[in-house]
Length: 412
Image (cartoon, rainbow, N blue to C red; front, side, top):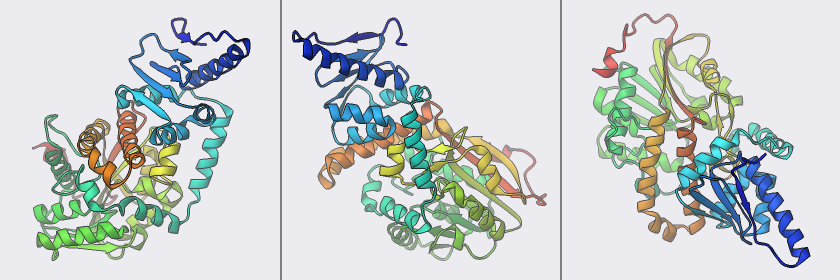
């Protein structure tokens, strides 16, 4: 039932048939509102029929009946589609609006929604290795200049930063993240490191430059490989860093350290056994490792629109699934949840993205720009509401006794 203070309004057509049609739309809108968990929003239709929470600060307007019907059918997917195509208008803070929607999402329980969500899950669960590589090529083969406009300027890190001080700029926080990881791994000169999913190459360069280690970074995006290699040569670290165009299953050799940031969300749960084998195969007797991954308290697919339009086949693991992936031959040393650090990182990205939005509209189009804005805002809302977590897990070979006895080295 609606809250007794909830206010449903509609125009009152004089014609009886028009009133009948208006009542149908009002009923459909009420159904949509309830399926969204009665968020603290006002939702208004193209014909001014509306539903409003008593303390609503923000408004969503649906511009046509087709969009209303699609939202009733599968709101998680069609909200994103409608927003990017301009069939929904937002009046107010998009992050705050999405927070309200995320909070209410747990109350959605229609059979149609569950069936469609399960169908998407079954489809994406069995995406082939070839398709996954194609997805990543498409995602990261946007010209690096696009990312340079809103990521940190020095190392182009496309993963969660670390804010030991809330006043840190993005560049400082990303460097702090990298050094924090290096301290957790207790890197020392001469160590050999293998990185699975090296992104734009920044972490490998930082490890080599700051700690004097040798790094093999595995990357499957041609655009990222080219960028990383050029940057490596520019800073004259190619004697310590090697970028390999291959994925984690093709890692060869043995290393003192394994590290992976933001990769396992993309490979799919059905490939975790292969990742476990790769880790076990490549770590030396006293080897140690660190995995950083977006996750959830309970394993689930990404948002349906995000999963199909922005980041195909993405799956967010539970903490237990990550621990199972680390395997039986390893011991977990430390688990940290940096959820709010990722929300802050995304806020910095969003601010920089909006500062360049006119450029993006010119280079691409308005739909592309709205899609990326929705992705950034939706991600912030998912972390601030606790729908998403950011796990950072440190582990080592179970027989390794050469480990720190305290966490002093992390903070001093």
